[in-house]
Image: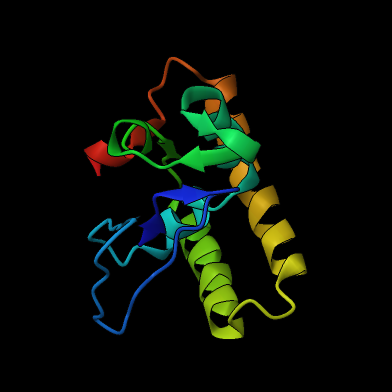
Length: 130
């Protein structure tokens, strides 16, 4: 799930089965790796460069932009480690997650750096390709 308008990426996982009626969207996935990547600082920077912004620096999370967010392919061990960190963040419910977020950002940035050093390998895909 994610809001239509936000200051930064606010993707989350809904395990309760609730529905929302307005100003929210969903990606039908329970992929914790994907959730970690979507909420990373590097994806925020990429998204700001490619998407519509409105007054006050808010971002609009329209499908035409969200589906183009690059998702780096990762080794199974990286996917597992990132997924475990995301699960810890979810369990913490926003409390004392700064160090977890910093660790996630470091791990995800390394995946994007590896992709940049081998840009011809096709080591990313977009959300639409998932």
